[in-house]
Image (cartoon, rainbow, N blue to C red):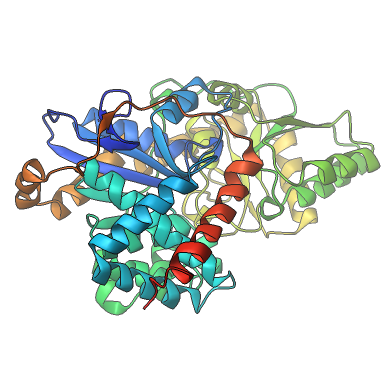
Length: 479
């Protein structure tokens, strides 16, 4: 089911009259969806839908809908966001209704939220706001007759799904990517997530090891490795031969954790050494202004270019026109862009962090350097720039073979589907047909409004917190 094809009940998704042959209806919940940095979620949903699964899309925050890729714009039109301009009243209604109809469940959810807050640096009211968000999610998944909720990223979205489960929503599972979850495992209640979830997906062996580090041993058997799959556009076509130019490409958000400052420092070392090169950085983010200043200060304007965000096809062309792809991150899980580069036959230069070493083998399909070491990074870049076309072809060919074996999208989708089937029994499927949606007046879904990114990311969270100050505290719904 999709927003476009389903029915909608008073601002809530309702189940379609008929199910697809697969007979399984799952909700996907992501903090911000769609998003340029999570295109792998879009591909995963498409792969499941191709196998007969109905997927209802939910997001915590409205991302605004301004995307360079038409596929993301289409996904935005099919996604319902809990937070956004003018949606506080809806959260208030759902919260009051849930508290009055299911007071015992509501109290349990509040206690869980307070328990999570005790290990968090964020305010208590923020965690109480998660309960309001969970009430909206409960209303939606009930109306849509969803059988299971799957969350990408074990952060606030997973906490909301866990609270919704306390309130009576279907079982949930979570795909943990890292590295954010592993840097603050107590704050995001990673242990509790593993304990309460039907199952947990890790995107790499490294991620699995970090989940096991924090999960109670009784939950270890619920942790499974399902890798991110590649888009068929990267796997079905032949890898182009290496270009004769001297371009290197970096793809990623311009955030401090991505290490672009170290990359600029390495570029200055190459420039001082008289090594010709061109560096294209695809992406945008909070570090852009600082990076532009570093580029200007190093007189690298003719060498380094910041392009901003571009669509998927432009990323593909940029990778194909490069001798290598570089990712100088301080912290990573297993970046999809490295998989895409290898699938296109391009060797990669990356840092020894997270699960990167599971994919990049020095001298086999690329280079690994220590994070934060500009000298090592400059040396690796110099070697890639001076390598013969034959050597680059050998590295790229090996890298393509490895990535196609480990990150085939169809194979990974089948593995995930098997987990869903194992945790959604026939009894649940039969009961779904008998479950009645909340008896609200039937309406139609309106096209979501575009909202400024600062509003989507902040103002309505403040509104929900204010809501709880008025309703939860003053209304004395707390135990």
